[in-house]
Each structure stands twice: as structure tokens, then as C-alpha cells.
Image 1 (tube, rainbow, N blue to C red):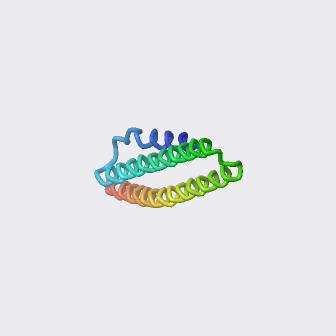
Image 2 (image 1 turned 90 degrees about the vertical axis):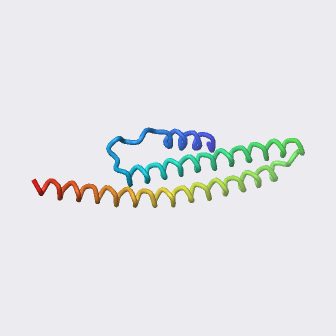
Image 3 (image 1 turned 60 degrees about the horizontal axis):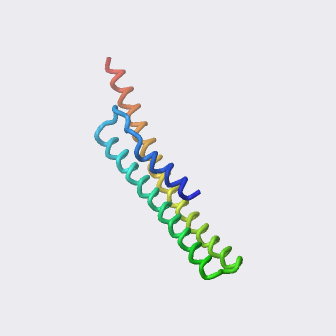
Length: 114
């Protein structure tokens, strides 16, 4: 699941930007893409650590309770990462909404000039 999320975020980050963006919008869009790539990397790193810990647990014969505790710990880390991403996403959404409002207002002003 972590790897799937990582791949989805990476795919989103690599999507082409719309051509009609102004300079500020392009800068914000690039920041967002960079953030998505970082989040993708975070998910991938967590998946790698989890896989490595499971391998180690199997080698030293952890009992099922120890493996369950380890899984809970990684689930908490994944949840924390997810919450962090949601917070960041809300910030970008607010910025996007503000930029859209400004764009619509400017468009309206220009239209009224005619």
C-alpha cells in the first residue's frame, strides 16, 4: 500500500503543467510538484524500512505479538506521514483557491473594461 501511494504521488508530480499559468502560478505548481516527489520518497522510504524490519524479524524468529507491535509502529508512522501530507495539501489548496479568485477577479475587471 505504501509503495502504491508512492507511485501515485510520483505520477502526479510528473504530470505536465498547464500552459496558461503565469510566473507565480508556475512557481507554486513547481513547489507542489516538488512536495509531491518528497512525499513519494517518504512513503517509499517507509516501505523499505518496513520490509527490512520484517526480514530481520523473520531471521530472528520474532513471535506474532512482536511482529504485530512492529506493524502497529509502522502503521502509526504511516498515519503520521499521511496527516502531514493532508496538512500540506490543505495549504496548497488554500493558495490555489486564492490564486483562482485573483485570476477570476482580474478576468472580470478586464472584461468590464471592454
